[in-house]
Every structure is written in structure tokens, then in C-alpha cells.
View 1 (cartoon, rainbow, N blue to C red):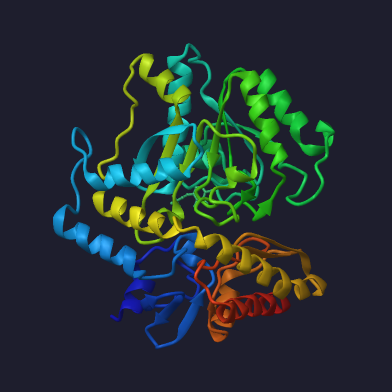
View 2: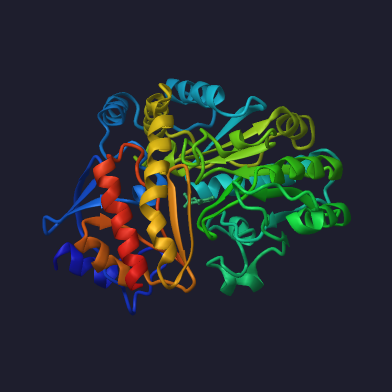
Length: 426
Ligand SMILES: *Cc1c(COP(=O)(O)O)cnc(C)c1O
């Protein structure tokens, strides 16, 4: 059997039907922004491998860091032991993230970092005299991962988990913030979505935390909303004794034009989840950060120890990759790159607005979206975008790109051209 034949017969892919599998391309190698397929075809990766390879593939700085680490300490358990790459990465994270966040928990993947954040919130409430606070509030159209607790706060309708509804912890869903990013703020709480949030936080005394994706809702619908919603949400959480968790797994590390989407606001979360681009797409890794309120609350209460500790926590190879990736952001050059990407996408995607079937075109940072008025098929998109030399994977109603920050203007034009072509035919 060839690798492709074996794959078709035996491997399971994300969100696919093994009985009726869609087209799957065999990738031989990747370099910069390009994937090379087994048949020699090259495709520009408009997806950054699910929003992670912000510096492109095989960046020499990250590659060297991982190779060097492999030769000294590829892995060691984190229970009772520590290492230099963990401390070095921690310092970089402290320097980059909102100042209140002083404690860092290393995780294996984004979903795990959400699980950890939610566990922290419940344990904080338990330790500070509120054992009844075990549930969560969240906004509709969100996405927080595929594990059980993370799934329970994904949008029950647009989320991909509705069939599990009966098996999930019931949570409190409030309306998606109605004021879009860039539009004037609407002060009337009945119209901006805050009235329902205020009501839920005030009346439901079982809520431990409000969890949401700040500014950009990613896999739940690629929607961008007004930062003032978050300033007000912070106030409402404080009044209700509820923690605020920001899931910046998608938005972190420059994607929304700020280093973190929190930078669009005037406030800070109590707990922050990071993932996806943290290693520059080199390997799976994620981070949960907390402020002193959370860490002191947990540490000074019973049982004091935070009850979580994955086998591969703080893996040195992943820490080395993440540290190298963050060092590449530290010169700040990503800002102009992301700005230029946004400006170019804005002008090149604009013509799609007038196409039949297109509901809205929007851009923010290095995120470009053509939202259709109907569901589009990723399987149908694949051969078309491959033909155009671009890798795109639409979902729901959205044909979108999140290109690597190092994408050249010429390559970006090919990506936007492919998106507009897809909007014409899908
Ligand atoms: C991708 C994503 C997750 C889940 O991360 P995984 O690494 O896939 O487990 C959680 N939250 C958000 C906002 C994401 O975009």
C-alpha cells in the first residue's frame, strides 16, 4: 500500500467521515509558506496550518533551537524537576502578556489549556469559599476545543459538538456581542448584548467564570466584535465574583494586529489560554496563565495544590521551539507585516462583496474572511484551490485565510485570488 492508500484505509482525520472520506493530499515537505505535495505540486499555505505557522515552515531559528535541545535534553518529567528552556520561555511570556498574569502552567494542547483554565476557576471558587460555583458562562458562536469541558462552552448550534449535548455539562450561553469591531459602540445594554450577560451573572450563583475569545471568535464563526464589550464584561464579572478567562489560542501572538487581542481592550483577564502559534507551528504546546488572585486563592485554600499535571508538561523541546518563536516576534517587525497583510487583503477581497451568495467580507489583522450566505464544502474547495496553488480549508459559511506573517505580497495576492474564486463557485 502507498502512504495515501494506507491513510484512506486506516487513518482518521479531523472532522471526517471514514466511510465517505473527502480528498486528502499527501504532503512531502514544507518550506517558508509553501507545502510540497507528493506529486510535486506546490501550494501556498493560506491557513498557517490551522493558524500556527506564523513564521512559515522550517524557520532556521526555530529549527536550530529544537535540534540543539534534542541533543541535550529532549524531555524530562516536570514533577519535582525543572529546566532552563522552561524558565527562559516563562520570562518571555511574562514580558509579552498582560502584566497581571504572573503564573504560567504549561499544557500539551489548546484544549488542555482550556481544561486547565476551567479547572483553575472551579478550584479558585472552591478554595475561596464558593464550592457551589462550578458552572461557566460564555458567549454564543465561541469555540474552545474538543475535550469535554471545552466542548461544553462551544456554541451549541454552530459548534461541532451538538450531538454530544446530552453528555455535556450544562453551561450558560449569552448572546454574541452585537456591535462589530470597528463600528461605533452602542451604549444600550439591551442592544449591545450586555443586558443578558448582566442578568445571567447576577442571578446564577453557580457560575465560576466567564470564558470567551476576546475580539475574534475563530472556529465558531470568524466574527470580530467591539472591545468595549470586554471592558464591560470585566466590570460585570467583578461585581458578581466571577472570574474572567480569555481564550487567546487563536488570537495570540499578533494575529489580530495586537500581540494579544487583550491589547485592544483596557482590561486584563484573570486567566489566559495560549496555544496554536506559540511554537510557531513546530509542535503541539499550549499555556495557561493566571494572576495572583487566582494563584493565591488556590494556594492559600484547601487542598492548596492545583490538581493537574500532564505527563509531558513543560516538554523541553516544545519550550525551546516556543522560546525561539517568541524571540522572532520580539523585534516587533511582525506589526508592520500584519498591518500590510490586512491592508492588502482589505483591497483584494473587497470585490467579493458584490458577488452573489456573499454575505459579508471582513478583515482584521492577518485574518481575511468572505462569509457566504450558505454553508460551503471544504471537500469541494480542495481541488479548486489546489489548482490555483493555494491551500485553503473553508468551514461553515466562511471562506477565510490566516496566512503566515512572512507571506510576500505576491503570494498573498494568490491567496486572496483563490478566496474570491472559491466565493464565485462554492
Ligand atoms: C484551536 C482552538 C482551541 C483548541 O486548541 P487545540 O490545540 O486544537 O486543542 C481552543 N480555543 C480556541 C479559540 C482555538 O482556536
